[in-house]
Length: 486
Image (cartoon, rainbow, N blue to C red; front, side, top):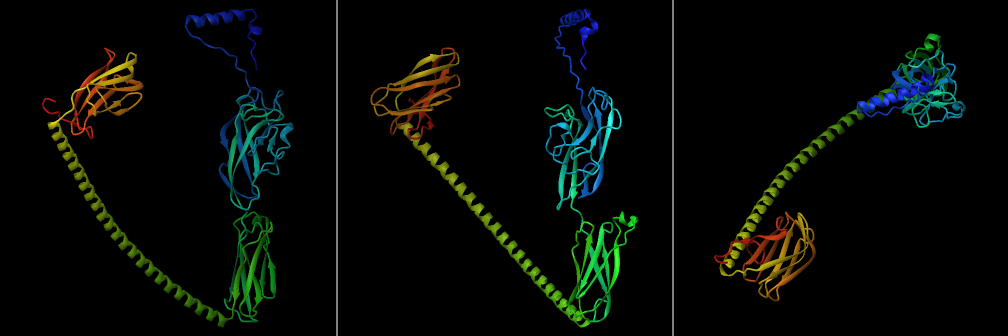
């Protein structure tokens, strides 16, 4: 329902708007005032329902209900309301067109439903805004041959208008779900006993038949050689409704040739049959022979089982022995690898010491002369400079020049270049330096210790500044102590 402020207040409506605006400005609060459009049809599930998460047998009919609240502005079943119903949506949403009679039938369609997807159409009472209504109905489980799980979806519906399920194109509301596990119909079960247990040809004997599911049991059939008999329960209304009752009946047969089989089968009202129960009827002599053969088989089985256990124990003992031997071998291998690693490390340390000793010996004999480096910049910024090239001077022909740059943008390694005269020029393109960048220039010569110079970007002068120098081995560029006077 829409509220027309101007119609109610007349000319005072403008004064109300001005007053609201003045109030917002005075409090320094900015608010957006919107007129909310009330929804005529809207529903909410209250959380009340019956028998959820149940297990039912195929074909069984069970009661269900969901309690829904009318949260819309229209009174359900009131003068302005469409007919209110409660519908099954299955797993596919069906748009409401003329009552949705063309939608696929629900798998839980029950005989008392109004239509194939409509358990309820029309309410027994008016439901105002905020009122609740209990949608009670039956469901009938579908016929299946193996266990299946279903989730049936239901929602309130304004007939010919919309589902009240909150989906796109529908009215506000929500679906409700009914999880159900459906089990196949249970077949009847049948068993038989005979008395006496061994029968001579021509001798009379009794057959006692017992079967389950009397409520749905139709009849039983017993076949023995050329003889056939049929029986069944006399089902009073009390027995008909007692699912736990058991059918028992005794039949009389005459013994035929030894070794013939008696077979009994039960049939229910849906013509489902039980697994046949059978007994082979033998003469006393054959029954005794069979018992002796059975005893021999059992003794043989026990012997084979004993031999199997002995074999399994022997196999287990062998596997344990092999596992222990493998563990010992792994331990020996690990110890050997550890010793080899230790010896390898010691050898490496020895080689390093020898290299250092050789480098120290060289530095005591000869070191390359000092050299000079000059850098040429392209652009200088606050904390960064880009160098286009640099020159290394005061060299001796045959000396090798190489540079390593850490934290630079561009090349990380420059050179090596062998000097042909007194200087070497390195063209860099653009090599970026920051205050944390470092470039080290090395000059080396055969049978001599080399020298290095380290440079960094000086922020105050905006130039590359020499930070330090020292001596290195010419082969590995390992830092060594410079000889006295070098």
